[in-house]
Length: 228
Image (cartoon, rainbow, N blue to C red; front, side, top):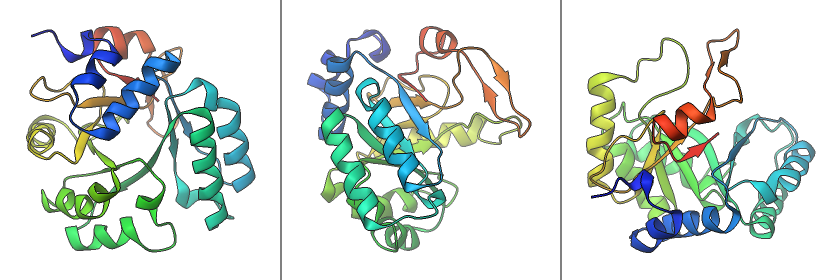
């Protein structure tokens, strides 16, 4: 079988069983883009301005909604409108890491009500498979999707080896999981997308351990799908 990373976005979308992935691959095909922007800004005005400027060029906007100092419900309404206007998905980089019942409350309720507006979110599987099941109870009925943090892009990260392998096993058997955060293609058992953070035009690092890699390395050599 031809690796998923060697197929066109249109082919992958046609074959995929998850409606959100059909939407994502269709967007990537239409826009000829596999770019996601990390919108790490801390005011409502900055976030909306940035989303409007880059929206025509990206397939996914990655947010950290809890750093927005003047967050209100109007923000997510306007963000959703921009996503519809510019044809991109919203990925809230929440990194859930608690027991199933707690993450259900965090994902579906609280101040941010993430499941109401974010197409995609992510989690660590440190608590076990129950975290996936808890998030799925909230997100699956809304057509949302989940990424597992199989790897991270920081120096000294502990998501390696057997832990990464467990991420892959859980992803393959849970339909709510649409892919991974990581640096490479992890499996051919299902078409699970890989989104890779820490991508820059030139490989480098910052003072807090973030390691940046080039698009050529991540897409061409590693078989990842979306660069952040």
